[in-house]
Length: 206
Image (tube, rainbow, N blue to C red; front, top):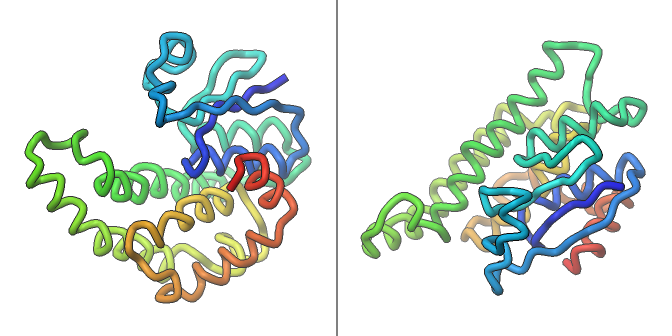
């Protein structure tokens, strides 16, 4: 049995959707950031980073969304969530997920967790003020050169799609109007029609 540790609205949603897509047998364990449960000793034993997602498997604990998504795709190859037979095509999927993780997510975090990069409150405010421009720049690249439509890689749905959907959910709170990115907006609407997405959102109370 798999256990996915999550907090509602975080990037853990991407892995949650992927588990639903493949029909995995799993349980959810909510980490309440408001109660600082991510720093509780019992959770830090599982993930010393003190972050979600964390996925407990029979082989051990996995963290980091790109790794979890790749693991799901490789564990259930029959679901076809990644082009596992084609190293170059699979690397393209990984490149998108790496960009979402290392660039877009980090840009988002500057608006709420500036303390990770600076101690000066004025610097934190400057990061918050920069957030809409930073996220818009990231999504302009996605709109212009990554998202083929209707899915990230054209007609083939992959593990990149739930990840994009998850991060696109943050645009409004980051002060960015998704309507400025028509392909992203169409992708977002299409994702909401998928049963796996509906199930994951319901499971997280979103």
